[in-house]
Length: 329
Image (cartoon, rainbow, N blue to C red; front, side, top):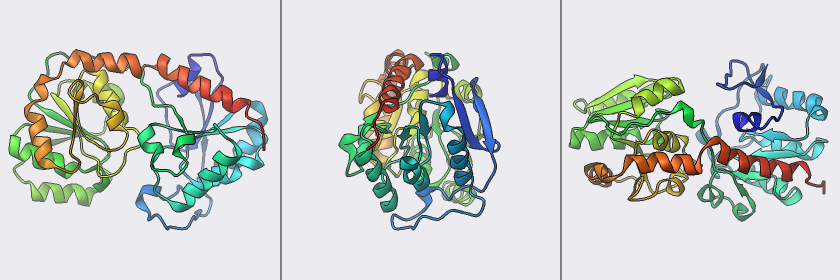
């Protein structure tokens, strides 16, 4: 989003936790403090808590100080505090809700904002929005990529790719179980978040043709991804979007994804990949067997038509223009 808006000559000032980096020309102001526990690792009934010296609280204290220098504030945090603080700020706030419904308290906080400030709540996909009771009132933005960072590959090697955080909700074990049958090499990339989970997979499938390559920059990642026959997406939960899907398409790599969450709105079944029965290793195996039917050029074409920075920038700019003139209740 920062790059898409920066390309249109908007001034962007980003507040982020210390150690954050962006591969774009934008001002990043680091903010110190303790991180929140991720919402996806808590139960729906979990009460809201803030750690001592909360980075979230520190960031929004800084927002209050800086607000008069800007026309719009954009919140990316799936946390209660920014929604609670919205009516206490003098500048309009647009919220990009980055996950599906996982918390009762968060649902209530977002609902209050959408009631008082219509049009200021955005989501990635309609499938994500449908998990909320107010989903029909959310603005759907999708996502976008700098396609110049992704190289098209017409002739892949005989390998598959799995890309994402290595954690139970991402369902890596299904992809490993599938290639344990097909014997197709599986290249695994992403943050090794849950080492115990990864070790259990290796113990359960000691002879599977898998290789963990590591966690890479965009350019390094796409250089490996683009040589694969397909990307396997095996998430157990409802992905709000699935950026790895459009990254794969940008390289010309078809996507085999469970038919749930954001990916079901991205993958064109039978044209740029296959949408299959969720949690079915048998369906994964069957889709792998016919993946070469997919035209890789069609995958790149879809990325260009629907997910370029220019197309994404149009959607974001139109939304923020509406947020900027939104009236207070």
